[in-house]
Length: 90
Image (cartoon, rainbow, N blue to C red; front, side, top):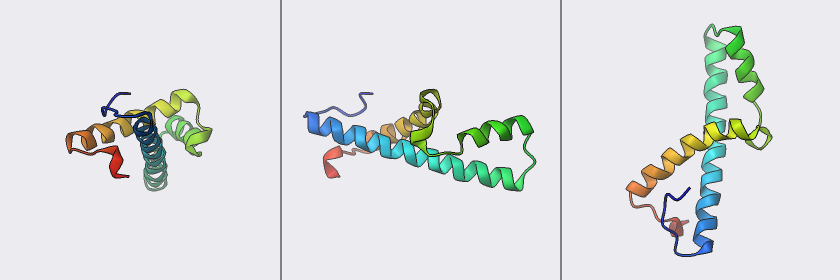
């Protein structure tokens, strides 16, 4: 993932840390959304069962499931880069 040009290894660590925070946030948002949908709509049982398996903390997910959240976090990072975000602003 090379979304922002790095000037130092410290800067790379900051971006990786930011990415992981965004990934976890994306996952938590999805859990909130999917539980809300499941509680207010008729969801096919097969989908609901699949969702329930993912209703756990991000760090407990399988690597393949984490990739879904990383995809969305990377989109956020791209938007930040286009907006001129510099990780040294942390």
